[in-house]
Length: 118
Length: 111
Image 1 (cartoon, chains in turn green, brown):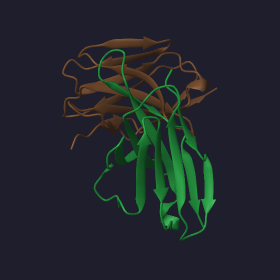
Image 2 (cartoon, chains in turn yellow, blue):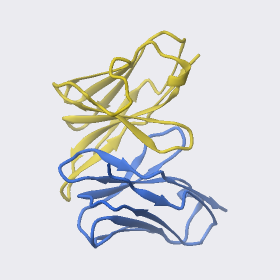
Image 3 (cartoon, chains in turn brown, yellow):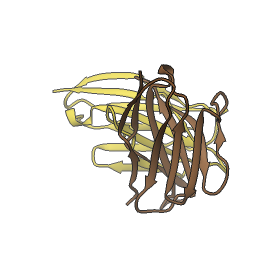
Image 4 (cartoon, one colour):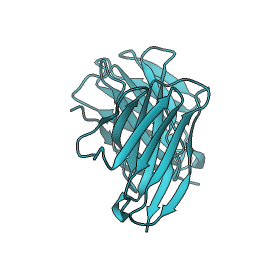
């Protein structure tokens, strides 16, 4: 199997506070994890690539000081939204890469975290 | 930048009808994946296609990868209400783990 969990599933926080979201690969090791955000009725937008033991690579336009990513082990990556503002409210989804059976690699997604900043 | 054009964006059909969703790009992908996403949940991997011309079947779903590995299609036969959801195609470029997503096709199957 390839199960990825996320915690929490929903979080409401006040503007100016920080929120940490955890992403875990439960039954496989993932050297690479990805963080996406998804706005209503839109597709997934890649925010950053997280590699175990090294600094994350952020996509253009994503503030690395605002969205802190830590990939401390082969099964855990965390995303911390610092000094959250209402415009940060979104659906955050992580994925973990696992070598595919037919070659290449496959990404398995977590269930997502709904962040609401009030 | 690799782009994936997915069409149609919205599709509403009656139960029992057939449908096809398309993903097209000017870029070559080393592999292409199809996902289905329910509201408030993460995407669930349906299939990965790797070889040009490859056809894979998953019950009533048929996935095809173009010969040049630039396009793919998803065909659903005799659609059922349980097929309702957002279908996403995503391609992986050569030497990369990153996925390039299409904009998605929101499918509604009416009983």
